[in-house]
Length: 287
Image (cartoon, rainbow, N blue to C red):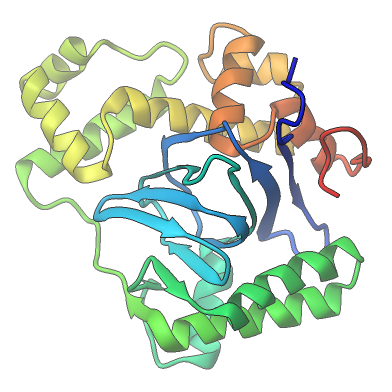
């Protein structure tokens, strides 16, 4: 039971049917911490109250009101409260296709685009993120799509860059990529690190070091993240959480619940209800 006067957490992670390549999260977190994970698409977040500490490969970003955090695909990161009262924020998760289509249409950038900076103070861009949320919540597809494109174009114009190729070249990188493929294929019953290294013809320590260098996290952390990603796709398709849990290799639904909530920010049941369009305002829901 929460202590008297304690700040309550709430979160809504959802998808607007008219913009299927965009996920939205609006939340207040105090005690919740996001473990190291990454996203297939982009993250564009704006804090409206408090401070969010975002741990990135090149250091920690302290994001407060008026700032925008930009995270490129597959960049590992963590997040936690930077002040005792936590943080309130609105985040957009546009797919790689959305961002690259906007870049091709409105900028001179060619190739796989990204953002050269991870955090900027840009109150106007922060307001645009809030406007996308507001338009989607009001069912205004024209406004949500239009403002999203203005936002992404603004950020690309000021901070856009072409991302370097991640194709593995060194032997260690190739081993890491092969290890990732094995873990994806055998997600339900993954091998031990020693067995995986032996299968690839390398040592456990060398594989651990190469994998961490290539993907920013050790194999077991990456596997948990990958399992949650696959579970999300299954929930999107209507699979029940208990069935998704066993299909991706978690021992049971509580195991999925714990990791899913830590990484996605909401429990799998709430996530699935949003996908089914049955979200209802209630205790713990965003105001």
